[in-house]
Length: 137
Image (cartoon, rainbow, N blue to C red; front, side, top):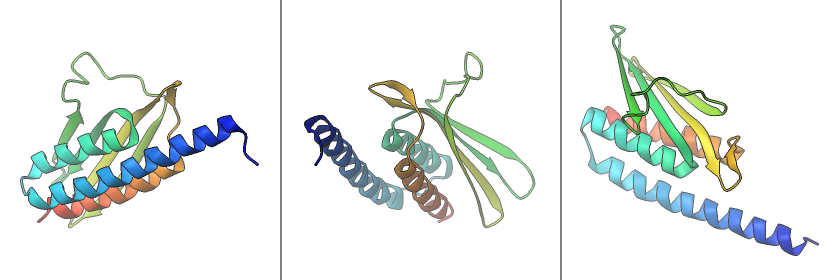
């Protein structure tokens, strides 16, 4: 039998995951409506950050010719230099010859900065695949 404290923590965690799933569904609907290259990627990045409670993130896009474009969220995060990162999630995908590298940094919690959880990684991977697929439409 679970102690009262563990039950409370489990209920909080489950409610948080349900909220994340609703956010994922809403984001999928929004993504399907947008067809504007970098605007779509910026929306995808900001939503992935919100979904996983990350502090900031980046999408690096490398096209077939080797040209690189980077999108940061929040946009001014590197204005004062590259932040030091303790924890990060990185996912790379190639879609129609274009490489996408999504990076989320520093998961925030009530206890401060913590490691990303397995469910964060699962949601993030699926989210990246959805975003890159919509980006080329």
